Length: 174
Length: 49
Image (cartoon, rainbow over all chains, first blue to last red; front, side):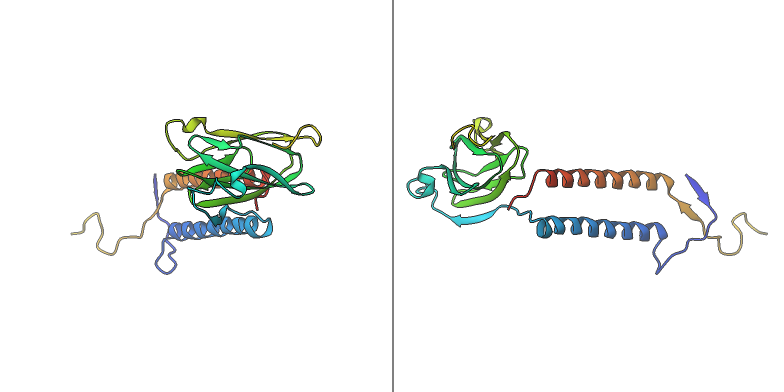
């Protein structure tokens, strides 16, 4: 610690250290905000939203969640409906060809769950009464486990499944 | 009779908080590196729409 006999050049009564710290903090926030804006608007990153509202007591009785799983909707495009319940996902395995663009719809029939696919940006809160949706292109062959990220009860740790991304023709749809 | 403190106004002293600056610099660099690493991970994992 040193004490110097240097004049303090205050601007509008603000100490230079405080002024520089404030300017740097503001600049840092501007940089962060700019990068997030680029990711969201220029690169197209979206956060999960509420696709629709459903009755959790009856959502699995009819409609797409009555027979959850993968459906092909176009060449290279699929949609997967997943039902989350304590303590499992239905289906527990989804198999898609590499390069597939998959829209995933998830809902819960009981309590709040999470749905996170490892090594991807898919991470959704699954709230009873709502359908969460995200679209992702699986461009790497491999297995991508999905897990519940919201503690939902005693067997929460056993609540998982897997997305298998395979070479075209290497397997059927899951 | 004069005191050691002087009769006139004291000369302004400019305290340079070197230790605080070092700690804050390390803190800011850590924040930037962590933020940047998460951002790059986000980009590397691909777009969700």
